[in-house]
Length: 162
Image 1 (cartoon, rainbow, N blue to C red):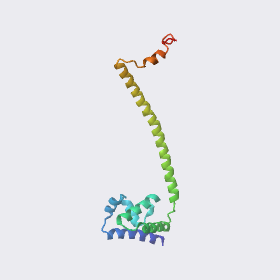
Image 2 (cartoon, one colour; image 1 turned 90 degrees about the vertical axis):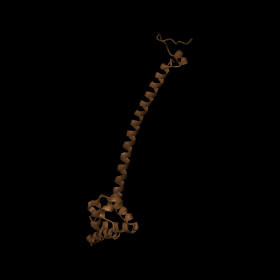
Image 3 (cartoon, helix red, strand yellow; image 1 turned 180 degrees about the vertical axis):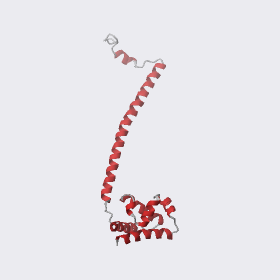
Image 4 (cartoon, helix red, strand yellow; image 1 turned 90 degrees about the horizontal axis):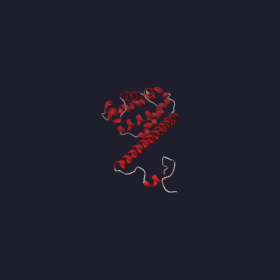
């Protein structure tokens, strides 16, 4: 019974594609699904397809290219998956997927934070060096006169009158 359900679903997909005069290769182009996965889907070989999220996406793409009712076909697909003995691990797969996304984003933010700080430090250093060079080139003091008076001279005294 389970094998019959798988074959029927896959055969129905193939028949719908052929009724519209579409070749398998044109389905691959339209859906961006690899040829081996289209063939596995039509043969009912779900174990040759990637995980649940991708598997469902392949069926959605296939059905939408053919212009068929998505809800009905997705329901049939879920039923054929259960009949095939594939465990319904969509919740576990989504949790795993979300955890992977969270971990990769956290690492990216850390990299961006450290890299951003280094870039900001480098730009600030270049800006300060450029400003000092411009001040010297235009025969101006690097430090304003008021600040220079308040700075201690080589003997440790202030140059401004006390």
